[in-house]
Length: 466
Image (cartoon, rainbow, N blue to C red; front, side):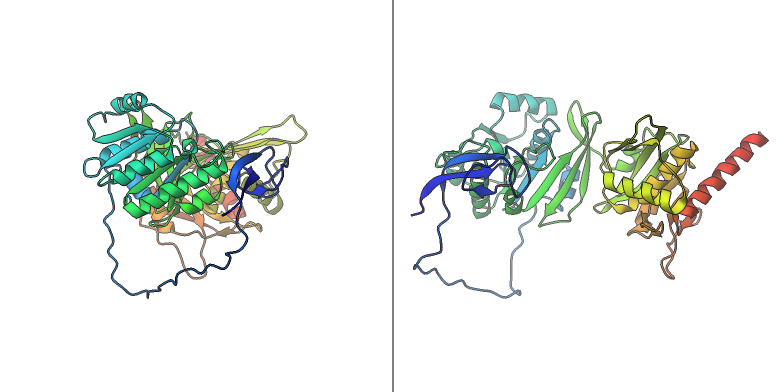
């Protein structure tokens, strides 16, 4: 039998130590190592006992694929890859108050029409869940509710249930196993609780939805192994100052990763947004300097968002570089390329960059749109209101092609845009643009500066003629 001892475990990454330390060597966090009593030590070796032989099978064979559980929440089904897979475990993370519980209650409410659904909350009482259900208009749905935190009781109940389709655990940090002396929310409790719940979900064949809290860095709290144990990891993102919410797939064994679903938070719950581009550009004004429209790709869908830049004189010795919704390091790279390769200086000026709508852009194709916004803000001259921009910028100032250009341009044409600033030729290949769509192929950032200068001169001439 394994010997019980006392260990010290980092609550951020799950690394175990023989004694207490102020900083974790694995993740570098301070004051995250706490004492956990009653944790079984890992036995050394397997001993003399022999295991059973494993039977191997070939790749070819008849395997029945169970149908997915499809809800009427199409954005959620899209992110999951077409619906919930029976026997799968899905981890949903997000900031407190962002709407995780609301989303999952709406999903199980819709799934309850054809499936037996159970909603277990360790943070709220049954009365509080019913109040939310009435606000969402789900009080008539056939969903079984419970307020419990004991994993042993949950497993016993699920074993006795005849047929369960979907189970929601809100949240995994509140669950505990009585055989461990550590408190709920610690690494040992989170890891063991999730392992037992996932095991019974795969054995009984029901879909398990687990809610996970996030740390101040935005990652799911608890051991990193928790994300490896589940089949799908979803992040529910959004800014409380905006009504938009983004459901993003970080890991998905049964569908595409980096797929997003867009929701709008209203008084009656989360509403689906079928055309995110139109929603993100709804408040856009086309006559503002420093604003460009970026044609991006999120998962399998094109999304048009507005990128805003502001360049202002700085009274500080070190000017500020503030970014919301984009990578700070990539902004520094674009500024360095504009100064070193194009002769545009941002010295002595504060630079602010914002992705409107609360969406976070991560693909390199936004480099050219950011450069255009910075040049427009510095010269205080707006870009043409009917133009979209995309392209990757290299360190020598060259503009490199990006993937799925046709899909980006089709989305732009659908929303009424008629001009684009895109990368130039790649060898002998040219992007296919529909008739009536004016294309400005850019090989180098200097070409973008020349095009923007020509547009400014033409606008000045038209104003002078008037």
